[in-house]
Structures are given as structure tokens and as C-alpha cells.
Image 1: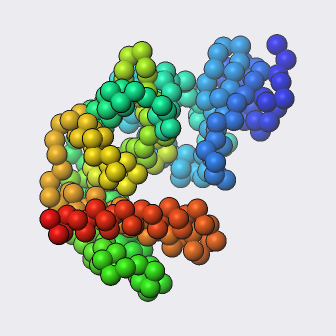
Image 2: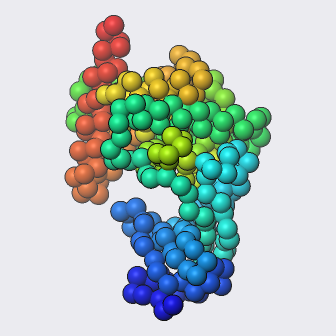
Image 3: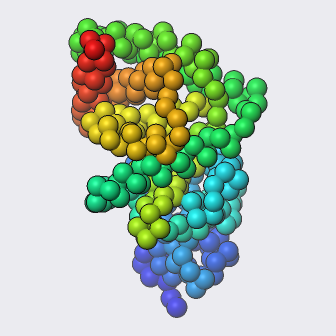
Length: 304
């Protein structure tokens, strides 16, 4: 069967490599995220379908290959794709399709949505628990990144102070000053790195969750895998948080909760600041709304 125009849009060298692994590529669907450095296709060949991804950099490629290896050890086969082949020179990864539909924006019945979040909590707990005792090098990597995030928060203070209300300024100060100490009190694990609903696959027939995208897998702290969920969902939909931690099997400690909050503050200000410096109104709005929501909830907790 001859390849169609869609297949021809895959870079020729990548298409030739995939064909050498699976047979001639006859069709391809671009499934990249809407950002400049995302390059992913669902390819069809005589052997079936698979996903091919070109990593943005050599370091991203190496990290994701290691992430696939970790996922294979930590999760059941039904919960993650298999890495079929890699090409160092092309920074390309070929992986198996995974049953299910991306959760982000998926219209689910309320009971199914709660069940999905419970299953996601169970999956993440097993992912974290598989870390075992992390190495000194892992702990150093996690510690250094948190120090960099605190420095970023501190660097944003002069330009953002006039745009934030006094309570928001106090939160940003706390992120700059408290993040390293709170991290020191937290256990280091191997994080998924992007544990958001865009990387969850909901299998309606089995009522189970799978996870994809291991580009950011590496050493960190438990709550780093919860920052997106906290800011985007849990603040306005606490029932989803309850369902998630029912699956995770334990609540956060007091210092873990504070660490989660301050990671979210740093992220919100980072969006806002980046949007201002790059002229991205969408990032400005995302950061502004995120900080307003955080201040409303954390201010209420402080008063309570």
C-alpha cells in the first residue's frame, strides 16, 4: 500500500527509520502538543500502529528513555506504553499505542471522573513507592532544582511586587525563602514529572488509568507530581482531591502541604512573569488567575 500525504509530512529520515522497524509507513497523524518543540506522530504501517516522537534535545531524549525504563519496572503493562525502539542520532523514540482516551477535556459521568482520579492516585503511589531508597546523586539533583526555583521566585519579586496584592507578595516571598528548607524535610522519589490529565488515558471498559509521556521523569519530591492537579483542579473541585488521595492511600503531611502550595505559587508567578517578558497574554492571564485563586484559598485558610 502506498504512503499518503500525511505520512510524507513525517521527516524523511525519521520515516525511513520507522519503516525499518515496522514496515513501510503508509499513514501518520500529527499528535503533537500545540508548542514549538513538540513533534509526535501516530504512524500506521503494515505491522499496525505506533507512536514516534522526536525529542527536543539530546538530554530530553536520554531522560525519556530512562523514564520508559522506570515505567516498565513500576507499572503494569496495561498502564503504560512500551518502548519499541530508539534512535540516538535522530533523538527519536518509537512506542506502542496505549488503550484509552486522554483525560483532559473528556466528558465523563461524575462517578467515572471520581473513579478516574482515585485510580490515578493509586497509580502514582505505586510509581513513587517503586523509587525505593534514592541515591545521593538523585537527592542532589532534586535539591538543586528546588534551589533554582526559589532563586527564580526571588528574582521575580522586584518586577512583580507592584502587580501582586500584599498577601500574594507574602506568598512569593515564602516561595523564595521556604522552598529549600521544606524540600529538605521531604523524601526524594522518582517523579513522573508531568502527571496531569493530558497524560492520563482513561479506559472506559476497564475503568482504569494509564499514563504516558516520560520526558520529565526524574528525581524530585512527591508533591511535584501534584502541582498541576492542585492549581488546575483541586482548589475549585475538592472532591477530586479527596478521590485522588483515597487512591494514593495517605494524606500529605503539614510540611508537604506547604511545599505543594509554594510550588504552585512559584509556578503561577512564573507563568505571569514569562508572559510579561515575552508578550504572551495567555501566560499572563493563566498566571494572574492562578495567583488570584491561590490567594483566595490560602488567605481563607490563614483566616480560618
